[in-house]
Image (cartoon, rainbow, N blue to C red; front, side, top):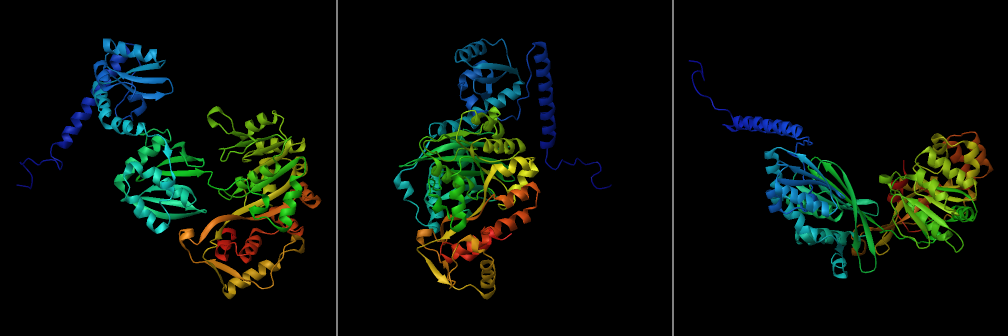
Length: 556
């Protein structure tokens, strides 16, 4: 007899596979029956099985009342409330609907299968307790005792691991604020939850949480940010406020699905200094003269270029503070408003209402401003409107994503702005990056290698006399070891490295010729523009930064 012939051979999973088949068939039958009943009763049908239940909707109806009415609220959007039912004539249901109507809810009922409703009722025990436990803790207030808890990076991980899950979010943000981090990253991996802070533009690994803490941390962050707790398959964005002793900080939250769970980034807005004097930005020599001269003009456009996170917004805010005087009306259009500036009308972009940079700019020009700041030029309509505003008596400040200052002109031409409009509208172009400043408490002089020194000398030799900067005769450079003051990172704070040039007759001629970026850059250098690398090297010679940081930021 062949092996297995005449014998009962069980399925690898016993009877589980057969049971699943019967369960699936039964559920399919129940859903078909619910569809038939819904059609007969002229009610909309809905397949509720497996749908994430909105915990805010669930919280509107007590469990006992939901059972009596055979009804579960499963979605809430403002006053719109969707409710799953099985028995339209249930007296308890009619009472519930009347109560919800008194509370001004616009109720939409859907007939569902009885099995699906039973599964939805189980959500009262699964998701509602966690929601209610966090519901009354929707603010983050950090006192001085929290902010003084974290002094050094090496002990930060240990400190956070010793704290209960309910305190983690607030204390983690307190640590980030003390370290002057701009972003907090929570990155789920296969076996752990990695926490990293972006400090002075560079990510620093802080610690690894056990993966079991991921759910409680995420629930807390979502609740604070007014995000859906039980939605995990789509990206969500929100924000909340952290209350500090002297001021409040806005936290912008992004949640994104990943292979091992949801990844979270919390952007801490308002951590950078604002209200700086222009001189403190890092501008010097001819660049400083150009900026001061062009900002005195009663009209025209000044553009700051660079990638995301290069300090463009801070530079523009410094310009606005310089220009903000009695008798001048300034309106900004930002996405989002990162810092509040006194005496200035700041308008946020509202994508939900269809307000973008182009439409928003048209609106604010009707408010009779003297100075307009547009967060970013992204398209032809914004570029054209901004250029026309600059030609009609307005000072326009904005940003553009290009690699260097000269590249802004071809970019605007590519967007469709005509040379005849662009040439007279432009006043000045600025490109920038942010260099980390070496810690003044642990910096010390050092001598670079011969190859590196040769690269420095070559760059310095190309500085035109018109740049109006002084190159020291003896080249002395500095680096830092790391100390408690800089959390052993060796750097503390950032400063700009700039390219700046005014649009003179030569540049205007090149715009009309639709010249290349290289041709425009050569003309700008000939008129006295420092390249960002040259500017960075000069800052290294001043002991502000070090050469590795200059190469990191400015080398292409």
